[in-house]
Image 1 (cartoon, rainbow, N blue to C red):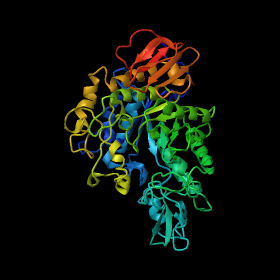
Image 2 (image 1 turned 60 degrees about the vertical axis):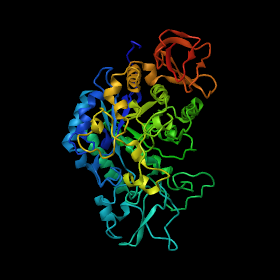
Image 3 (image 1 turned 45 degrees about the vertical axis):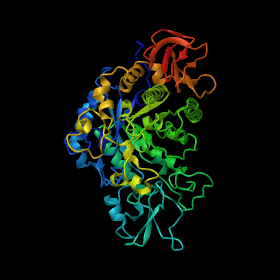
Image 4 (image 1 turned 30 degrees about the vertical axis):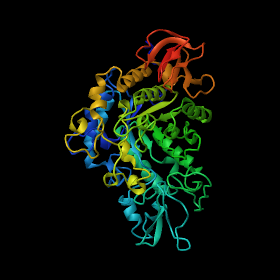
Length: 545
């Protein structure tokens, strides 16, 4: 490991590692089976206690813990300034914030600005009558020809307009019908939402993950979306020309940025939802005037475990990322099946023999690329996905389109802490059943195994923390794209590091001019200075040139 300490003046959100916590599933302190804020506080040392025995993350992103009917488990907010009793109290949040900051861990709140719950007081007023002062806080329209106002479709599939019998108009919802979209063309809405964001900034929150941020605005002339001639995506057969990525969105994000910049060292990362065939749309949103970071979601759509497939994603983003932008990569999150299952040869309630090796390759790539890595809780254990019969599906998306897609329950199962019943997540009955592989994958077991995926993540995170070139150095892809090996260089003024990732179960030869001292390898046999290197099957190798 390099003895050099980071000297870069780059902000923390460029240098650091962010760990996403699905609050409902991480740790339950009161035994009711639902994850809570005190539970997270109890496990902060696991995340970063200042030593290589911890995961070494710099920030945690908390999924919504606000007051909510929980029809979409927190993404349907009814009060942005209150903590849902299932997750604790405001005092619990303040203690968590203080304890995290004491350990040098930043807190990023998930914030949902595109829509509210239909139980939010704003919407209750808005639907009360056509002349209510808050009517224009949401998007209401008369029908057209006895049908919906437009042909717009919701992201989960189906129509995006819901008829309200009480007032005889339709309201628009980009997602579920209980999540009406706010009208971001109304200045009062802007002020109210920005005030809610300021509330959390005043408390000391370090940043925000902004949900569905490129859906904020819709066409003010309410034109129909054009039909999509090819492709199928989440039930849609139309392009989203008039319901997503409107040019006016950038002006709104500049207002978000101006507010955030009033506070020192704060950041925003945006969820930029796109079709799988759209290339790096997030790059257009990350710059000095808008979002600090915008998720490159393309890794989530990579279906084949091939080096050239992942390199293609990175190279596209690097080409499109502006000089004042910065990449942000993610392999898993709360909306898609976990990558240890998608890419690891998933077998129901088990792994293929090479799954752990592939998980290490993914970890090495995520944590050594130029950009900010976002880890999803449990990926450091190679947690996979659990599938459910319809009667047990809790996710509204899963119930809507099952069995084509069983929903997001699969990737939201409780964190595996111990081999005990409940996996150490809860002393009660967990809200979702735990992974039956808990005994093999849990933190307690993995921590005792120096070759576990968790041990490899820990070595990687602490190497990154102590190696400036891996934090903020330049990125250079080496050689022509290959299906077997992804080869690239990270370099700053004082360090040059080559990352070599073998995506296959066969040995792979590196070019003759690639060599150096071994910083880290996933192969237990690799311990010598490397020259004329042949990578072992599924080996991740970092060399200091």
